[in-house]
Image (cartoon, rainbow, N blue to C red; front, side):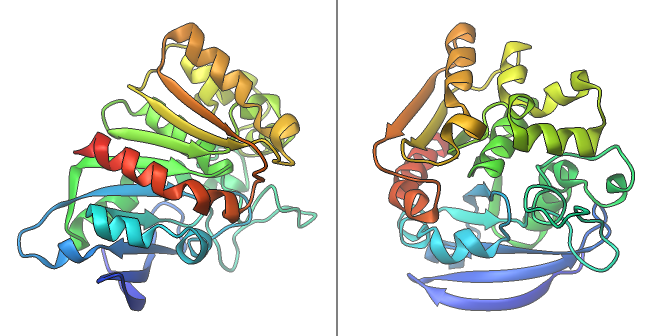
Length: 282
């Protein structure tokens, strides 16, 4: 698979890069970022990798420029990969009203089944299959040590993908995840649009429902700001908390007083997550 280098910058002894390729899944060009810590320059080295899935309206650039992960990744020897959140480009369908919560920038990490979305909106297969193949072929990653995290819509993606592919991801965490898309306006719009009106089909894209239906992970770390404007209407961490309690899934849910939904919140607790993932990945 051909890979184009968009930019590289020296940072904390490592390299922050941005790359582009033509995707077989989305049938569009896709851009992503990779931070290689200084340890990656050592011959024969294979390093653990943490995947970060971004939220609504975001691209790879939001966390790359504002997440403040590079210094800790350089210390820990952790590769950090940040994909885009949806296909983009000429001919890719978008929300008819230009809304931020559906279409471009809002792929919800699902494989759409409904027209016209099904042709391009295949973000689950892109994240689970295609992009890992590309990363493994071009970067010094240890694919046996992969972690997964994300924010908001990306937190939903991280939780659901980890729950559906047991053993694939050795660690999973989230920042302010959409805990149950079936039970919030963002999720109802997205899942209904991409997957159709059969709510039974939505359950495989709902972390709370997946846990209720028997899916398991070894442990979860979740941070949630208590001053988050979307806390009650969209995110509903209490639903995830109750599902984990009933199923015996170890969940560390940290409610952070005064923090909102922004990258100020994410940057404040990013290092905690990186160190937690590094410990889990070994």
